[in-house]
Length: 352
Image 1 (cartoon, rainbow, N blue to C red):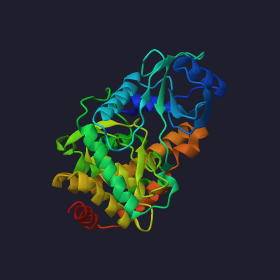
Image 2: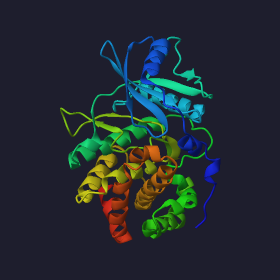
Image 3: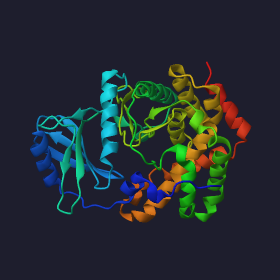
């Protein structure tokens, strides 16, 4: 197996590894008042590579405030902002956060903390809804999740922006780069993960560049999907566009599927999502054929990166490892199936 570019060359990797001083809540409230002219209170939310807050204005309106860490690539944030602006113009039927402009009409603000560096501040509209991970899984909801993912993908397909140079560790396209981190995986699990990387190198790597490509969300996990409490099968919103990449569109579906393989009724859940997605977007046969390989690759990524990250950020271990157990259970489940059986399952649910 051949590892490609070293992780030290990855700008996003630097952002993930950077430590910074948390801002006091009072200072954050003063910042919002100064920059946006809105008075209110903040509540800190969990986040892997920035400071994220829920800001509740005195008027009762709610927002999400994101303050990037000093090593975050500003060009990457501007890319995200441009994608959200594009989705507003195409009137996406999937509810999405909207950027709130500063008092001077800008989409962001440069904060210069005492410790040095620059931290980009952005305020977004708050989407109400219950995060999907808090709800018991069901096939009807998963079918709608599949539809929403495909609909969002169609909206992003017309976006001509491109992410800045560099690689995102969570991009399935660069799975083989993670061979550099394999020693962080528990020795008892390493062989299974290495097997996935070897399969990716053999079957996926040679053809990835030939697949249909576009900007994709790349993080359609259950924490980023909001559900309408009044209609628990309906998607009320999609959040967190921080992992967007320009990549094969099928990668987006592989990412979404990876969060539904750790339950006993995974066949029903995956089948429903595949059907929902296919009702909106029909994948090409070559994409369908590679989907099982890409799905297993995403599960392997969800094992490798958290173990690596938790070692360098023990203070944030609980958040970093929140999907790790599910990824391991999912990978074990799929590894126990003959390849032909998994391929037939995926193919049969991507048809009418």
